[in-house]
Image 1 (cartoon, rainbow, N blue to C red):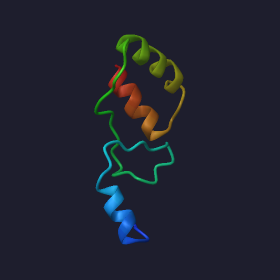
Image 2 (cartoon, rainbow, N blue to C red):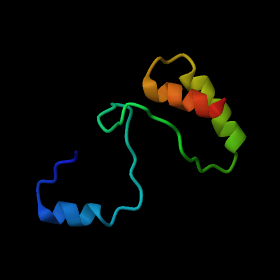
Image 3 (cartoon, rainbow, N blue to C red):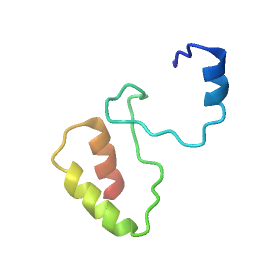
Image 4 (cartoon, rainbow, N blue to C red):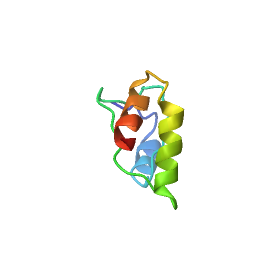
Length: 69
């Protein structure tokens, strides 16, 4: 659940188009996955992402690796 401090905050959240989260895992269902990417050079991005994340044991890194493969 998400706690909103004011009604105005809730109304503003309803107008949100994009949400970007960090890798803290504070907003998760326990089964992270990559659903979509936007890049001019998708293969290059996937290659770089795989290289960067391949040494990590973090659950979100595993999701990135799975998507890249």
